[in-house]
Length: 217
Image 1 (cartoon, one colour):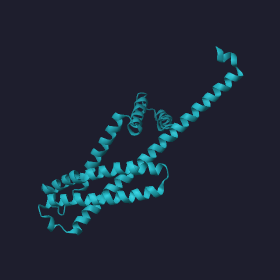
Image 2: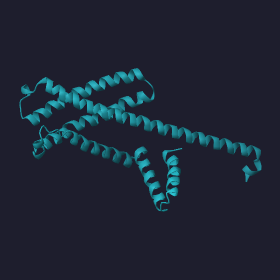
Image 3: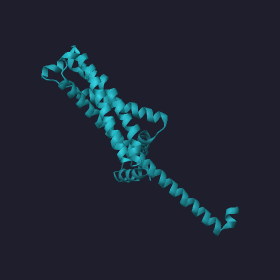
Image 4: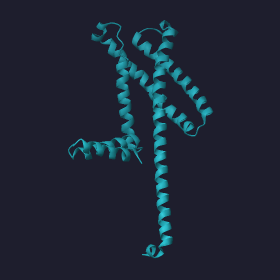
């Protein structure tokens, strides 16, 4: 039984007891089915729209959390929002690389329970993402400070790289967990459908053996 199959009867029961208009029930049912297809479908259009929508929303959230004023008066200045926008431009690509690298290199190991390979690849990926963030942080600081490379302290560079590596790892682990759960759900659904089909085929074969004259009609 899928998520839609399980939630729709409950929705019908609640809305009927709440005396809702009859048009609302099919409307909500269609919304749930559309949302279910949008989340779980691997078709080209839904897949691309889902990923684009996610990164747009994530970029907006990243922009907002990058607005860190030191004083109230900073809100009226242009530099605060410029820094936040540059943070999106420089660091979102690292997050995107991190998410798809985690999914490509770790998801299969997680599904097949190859935990030693999973740990090794995870360590390598974390190191690579941190080194990439060191490079990106260097370019970011050179852009916003308008200074020379020699004037950038390693402590400041390490701080920026560490914070944004934490952001990249957090969203990568979140998406990895979602992908693992989604694949597990779809796999269980496929097993149930195959089991149901097998039972139906065996039942038809059994009936054909008992009533051969009907199977010939």
